Image (cartoon, rainbow, N blue to C red; front, side, top):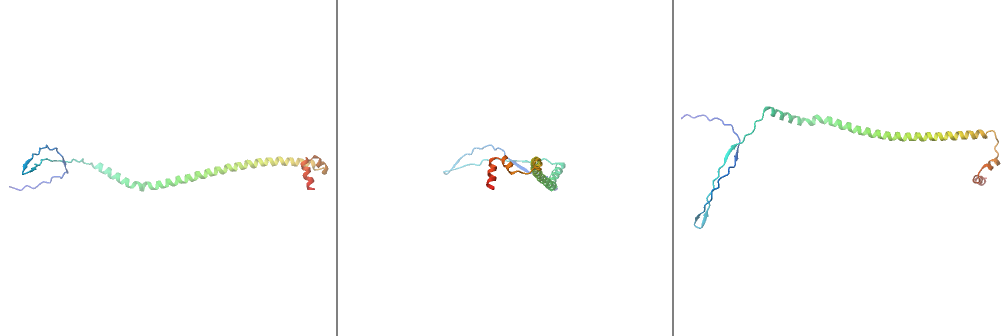
Length: 161
């Protein structure tokens, strides 16, 4: 007989599938005071595991996804750093704006106070001018001034003299 070349069979993984064996009752055979059990036979059938074949497109998609995931951090890192820097600068500017607004409010209050003091001084100036103009031509008579003073002022002047 001629020898036939063996053909290569693709290796497929094999997975053992348990098969329920039919129980065979063990029978006891007495042997000089000992009981010996007979073995139970079980059969196992191997079935091939079928793995779905991936398409070239799925492999390419996975490869591209993996590549993009690896590069994602290096692509977004500079933009993220710049964005964080801008957010930090924005917070600083907002704090500075609030500080300037507080200072502006203080300055407005000081301006209003200065205006009210200016008006009060103008009023006192007009009163003083009118008094000086009224008293400018007259000689001062100390007795007349004493007569118009209240008793407390007179007592102060008496103590000083």
